[in-house]
Structure formats: C-alpha cells, structure tokens
Image 1 (cartoon, protein in one colour):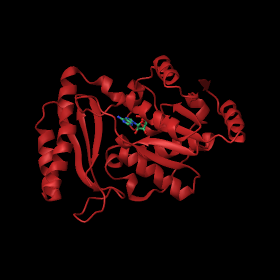
Image 2 (tube, rainbow, N blue to C red):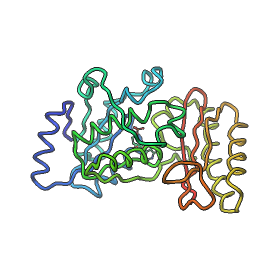
Image 3 (cartoon, rainbow, N blue to C red):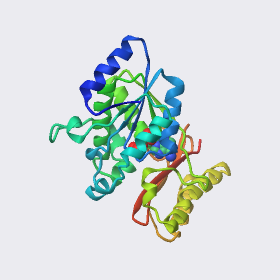
Length: 279
Ligand code: AMP
C-alpha cells in the first residue's frame, strides 16, 4: 500500500493511474477502522481498479471540541488493517494540508442541513460537505462508497454532488453490526460493558418499529412506542427516534415511497446513531 500525507504527491500518483485507464474507488474515513469501514473497502475493490482510503479526523465537522479531542486515532493499527485488506492507497493528511487557517464555506443543501443530526449537531453538515468536497477535488474518484450507518450524510453528499455537478457516483453500503446487533462505530470503544448492553436497545427499537410498521400501526404511534422503549433503558438519553421519508428525511407520510427509521441517543457519555430501512 502506498501512503501519502500531501495532496501534491497523491495527485501525481493518481494522475499516472488515471492515464493508465484505471478507475478509482474511494472510501473516506476518520480512522479507528472497524469491519464496517473494511466492508466499504471490499465494495470498492469489487467495483474499481484502484482503491483509496482516506483517514482524516476533520475538525470542521465537530461541534463539540471535547468530542474532537477524544476521537480515537490509532494510525498504526489502521495502517495494518488497510494493508491486510489490500487497500492500494492511504491518504492521511495533517490538518494543515487540508485547511489554510479559517476558511469560509457554505453550501445551501436545503432542509437536510437542519433536520435530525443537523438539529443536534449544528454546523456538522457544513463541515462534512466542506471536507468531502476538498477530498473529492483532490482524489477525483469515479466511485465513492459511504455507509448507510450515516444515512443522512449519504443524502447530504448526494445533494452536494447533484448541486455542484461533481463527476462521482456515490454508493451507499449496508450497516455492519456486531453479532449482538450493535452497529459498528469508532465511538463504540468508549462504551463500558454496561453501556454496550444498554446500547442494544437502539437496534431492538428499530426492529420493533419495522415490525409495527408491517403490522399497520400508525407512524406517530410507532415513534411513541420506540421512544418509550429507549427512554426506559437505564443509562440512555434519547435525542430522536423518527420515521422519515427516505429521500428528503422530512417526517414520513403513510404514502411515502421510501421510509427509514432513524435514532440518535446518548449511552453513558457516548452519542450513538443507527437506522433501519423500513420501506
Ligand atoms: P467514519 O470513520 O465514522 O467517518 O465512517 C467512515 C465511513 O464508514 C462512513 O461512510 C460511514 O457511514 C461508514 N461506516 C461507519 N460505520 C459503519 C458500519 N457499521 N457499517 C458500514 N459502514 C460504516
């Protein structure tokens, strides 16, 4: 695996590969890699000639400085995992390589910006679009693989790609879970054994919501029951549980053609998100 920390060296290398006619499959991450990340890489390997993974903990998407500070950064272990997974290129730039001081950035992505995650993490999606735009601009991938785990993020990035007419195809990949159902996440290492047990209620509530929906229960009642289930679990603090339109993420209507149930909650001191596609 080739490792780059500067844009220039990476771009020179990618330029050569493009000239040879290779397609480029890209996986953007913040590191602390787990099997969920590696499943995106596996998809990329299947669909593109050359795979590139970036590890960059992007400061502009963190609205909580303490969260940024404690975000795990096990770069040696991550590099070894990518080597084993036969990733072709790792791009691991320092912050100064990506940002020249404070930069102005605002992209009007419409209501998606302030819904759900946007409401609880103000500014988050401006930081996400800012860094993903820069990374797409440097790498110019043909295909970019993102996880359904961050469902709203996929919608936001697709919106940006459409608005700016970027020549990249965004592919959404399924959520990888622990055997007990907990969605894999870099933040799970902050969960104590008890927190981990409590966190299972998220997946259980999402599944329950799916069954209720299939039984014909009204949407508002499903949300109420799922929220109550999570709120009753010790150590958890619910932020939202909602059934949303799978395209707009506005509140779902019974006739919405695609519906996704999304949840965010704090478990202990860790904020977790998860979702399930219901229709
Ligand atoms: P992150 O490092 O958390 O920014 O995640 C990098 C990419 O991996 C994003 O596209 C995530 O949606 C995706 N991802 C994170 N967790 C999972 C998971 N459990 N299963 C599949 N993809 C995931």
